[in-house]
View (tube, one colour):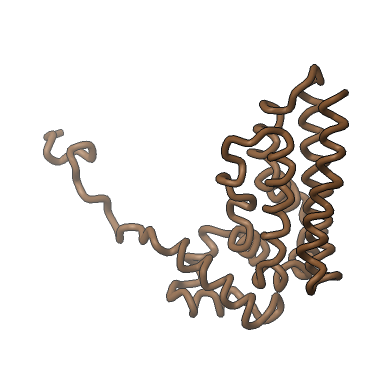
Length: 202
């Protein structure tokens, strides 16, 4: 075969080129509709129309509405820059700040009730959510936590901190709300930092 006709010689692929903006548009449309219409009113048909894409284009990327919503509202759930150059106490505060910030977002508040029901029915969805939400922070905690604790024990400690922080943030956003939110976040941070201090001395 002639080099000029081989795929490795820079030939254009067959078919239409993939639109790299589709994911961004679909995720943005999903967040917008969640705020405007809530979980029930947010449909794949409506997302496709808002994003200007076809429903098959969405189906190729996300297997269900729940997967799409989870990706749209969580993405990198806790921003990595929160963890820049932190010690163990800073890590705990970053988890608190990231969790409360996440559950304050209007699209997250709108999605949570429906998403919780979807999570109850899908082990794969639960596994993916927990892995994406906890993976990088747990790895970092295992590196920076002082003491002689076993790495597996450190990972369990990190998961426990995240569960406590995210659970408090979720309850605060859906049940407490209002002016108590900021004070509550600060107090949760203080209490978890005390717990972390106890582990540092263990």
